[in-house]
Length: 385
Image (cartoon, rainbow, N blue to C red; front, side, top):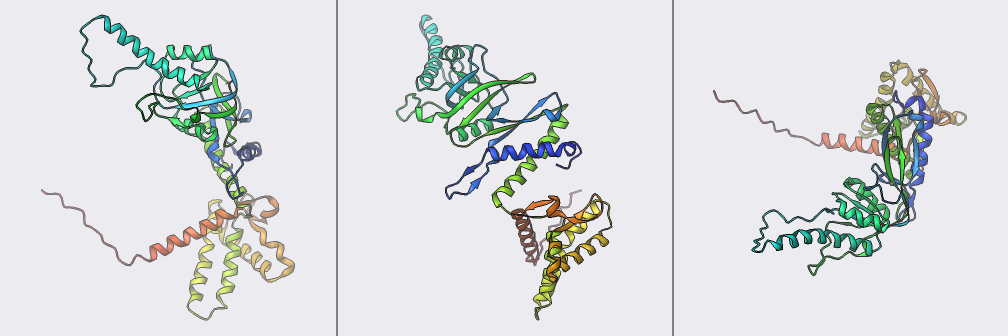
């Protein structure tokens, strides 16, 4: 949220991200809250200000209906997700038909239409009133959908189709063939949704699926002047969504700005002096290594890292040795003013889970590198003259 484009409106986007993540809250089998961020779709639309961005309740697809004669809204939707063509059936490459009677040619052409018509009718008879297809749908098939009062969308991206199938409980069908060699459509393959409707945003139409069966879904609609701005906002929002998810799932936060590393370094240094073995050296070195984080933060902000880190260590030493100074444990770096401040009070926080994992992974990476005791180097082959 601190980028040049989003930073000016960080409060606006921060609230939008939190609303979006809370909207997709679910519970796993153990009763723990989970926030599947894949249920949050991010759509980008040109025009207007970034302040016109909003959260849409439902999963939105960046496309409109396949035909203008279709209804704009369907209640109690039954969704069919298909991954095959609904165009006039053509014989596969390499299939050869020898015809002796020219009249048979017209019957072959008619049967090509009838095969697709039977497939469409199977879906409609099974109760499908929203059809999402990753391939093409020709005009003849669209006519049947219009007459049945259904919404059909063609050339839906496969990623979107997978997410819709997961949210609505649908099954993606690659073919209608069954075990007996016939074509059937099982109504159990349909997903359910409270409402599917078409909304117009800027110059584009979008299909919105609301009240999905399995997981609640929502969409972040980003507005902006050009592609560069939209891409930058998208990147910032994705990072923010991941952080909010981590924070809500771990349910614990710690002070940011190098406070954790400085406090842990001071604690480990005092712990090392209580040991009378060579482990003392390892713990002391680990404590010193932790100070790299606040030093790098200060250097990146063009501040005096030596002075700031020394002050920070003094604050945390006082918080751990003097009970009346315990409130200093939340102090970290303020890189805007170049001083120390209470990051817990200022709201500069990090998910505890991310902090623990980063320290664990860094330690494991160092151990793995130190275990390498031999290196085989191959000389490059000499080019023959």
